[in-house]
Image (tube, rainbow, N blue to C red; front, side, top):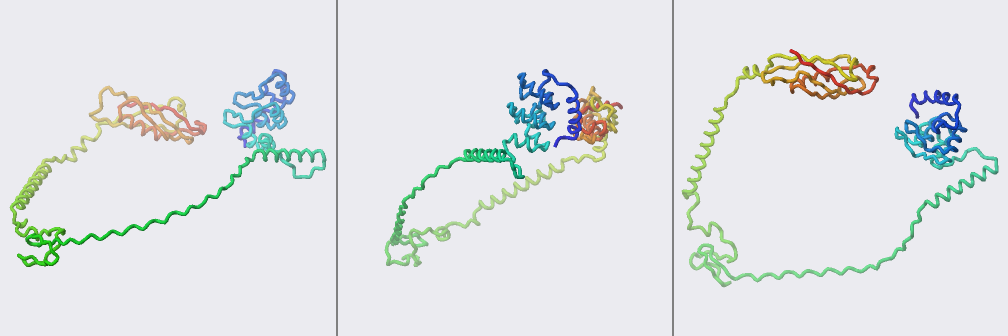
Length: 363
């Protein structure tokens, strides 16, 4: 559907162009907008471009669709007009026809033929429709791709060979070598079961010696002096580390809260007077003033004028602001004040607007 503004302008443009006499020198777009068939034929006969455009990028075919000149649409299509050319709005003739609700024109562009539901008594028209249907069916039959039939060749199934059973591992022969768990003496005989010196049962010579059995003559770990040396060194290191931590904590000076708060308080404030410039001049409802705190650390010679570039929504509220000039405190104060300013939506004509608010800071 066309916009209400375009629908209100269509009768006026039609009456305006129909009331003016057309000549051979009239451009093709103006002749189509006026709906003058003779002028369109004259322009095409004079060699006019059938895809001629106006200032809005709309072709003669798009204008014929917008003004609902169905006879001119058929005439331009027969003359070779391209319905897929787009105007400055990004719409082509087919989309314009869909918006205008011209189903016959859409069918003409898409090469569709609507068959009337009422029976046709005219024999000539009936034969013509049957011929059209037959041509459409032939075109559809030619467009259907033919899939070649590939014969399926059955593959011979080769039986997989049965897996061969894995040979079971042969048990290793049991060793006949034995030893005494106390003295470690080796005996190579199956008949001997006890040690001749300690009278204890012999074990397999390949088994690992137990710690208690192999170190019977060694001194216990708890009786060695190295354990006590390690314990003393650990205790000394821990005590020295604790002393260092305690001395560092006692050396920290906690500042006085009253002195810190007194230093952070500003000495005075600078007031920033706002002025809207550019497209925002005279359209403000409220321009918020800026208040900039003054500290002793303010650099000398800092500019006292800050320009805040703002963006407004359709309701006249600031949703984006960026400040330039001055120092950081001035820019922060000017940005906060600019975001609290409001403008008249009526004066902005209900659209988003950009502009600049200048803040001049004075004591």
